[in-house]
Image 1 (cartoon, rainbow, N blue to C red):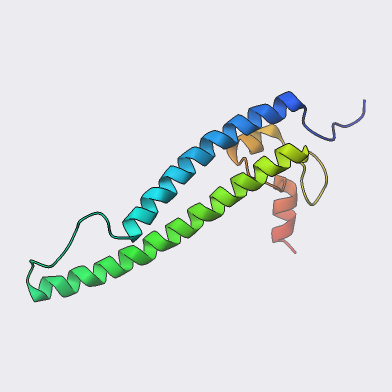
Image 2: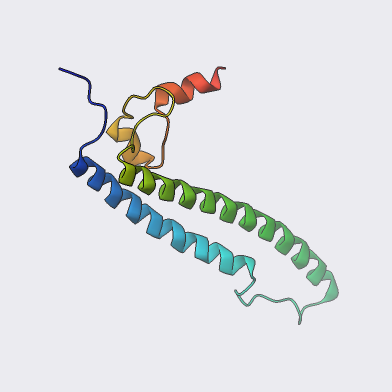
Length: 127
């Protein structure tokens, strides 16, 4: 029997549902991070002592930097999921970009935006 070269339409639909669910959650998280970065949470130091205000501003700067990093990471995740949806449309979803073989469905369920099999990912780190 020949080796399977792509996932069936039914399997692709299963993956699409997983991706859409993760995409909705990721966008919601990203929106929360953006709101936090815009400082819409209402925390202000206008009525506090000058010494406390300096400490608070320093903590806010660190917090905003971390929030910005988290937002950038979340945006990259969203873009990865959107790319996976395009691959589903093209019927190339789940095909390892290094080996050309199918990525195991267990990996795709856990990491639906994966473009490399574990073998290819591991080999890539050894080069």
